[in-house]
Image (cartoon, rainbow, N blue to C red):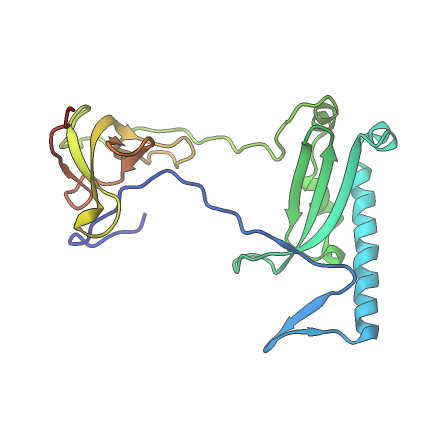
Length: 237
């Protein structure tokens, strides 16, 4: 966790998920190449060769994917395979991903990506990303089984030993949810030593709090006055 200076408020955190970047799909008929100064159109001959190579690679990948799908699912068109390249908007990922869609009726199936262009996809890497046999049957039966499965949560471990917290359950507090004096919100402590299931072993937050003006529960990552402090009594109408 990032350390904060003692004289700066440490904002209390709302549980949130990081939003995944939305991929932009490349058109097979009009590829663009990025260079300094912006995109430019390939010469006709180079564009044709690039398009030909991409189409051939996609056909090859589709064949590899179909070799894992039960033949009767493909023959009855219960399963549809779609392969595309997509531009990734995240600067920390590969500029072009190859996206594999395995689609069944009832919004079943899976989508996963390989961090390279189609012609670079390795058969071994693809096979390691493919669902196992039981998933295809579940999707065929209309079961929305998740692939890849959720990672197993780590063992929770124990809260820090020998730490005496300033507040207890039921205490009225104020939490710093944003910078500035107006960023303090009143609430009530509802549990001690909170942890999310996916946090590393032994990672805990001292308090979980129900704010007066918010339905969601939040947590205080530190037991310090710049993060959580004594609050006013609950106003009764």
